[in-house]
Amino acid sequence: MLAQIQVSPRPSGTDDDRYAYVDAAIAVIQQSGLVYEVGAMGTTIQGTPDQLWPLLRAVHEATVQAGASAVSSVIKVGQGKDDAGPTIQDLVGKFRA
Image (cartoon, rainbow, N blue to C red; front, side, top):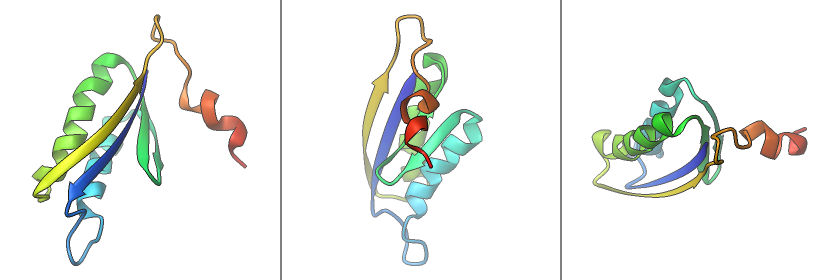
């Protein structure tokens, strides 16, 4: 399964660290041990449904736990019938230098 999440905390960070609350969300993904790819407009994560659904919630909530006053998240999920759908590499590997 692939999921992409874009968190939009308000504010996005602090005076000293412009993207501190976004970084807190990405840190949760990094700590998951799953394959992921950070993009300019969201992060794509690869894993099983049992791994990804709770992780998506944790990523969303991490922004508020880090100090944001509010957050909106946009989530895209793609899943194959047998959970052996395409990987991140399958979809974007040919476009990498």
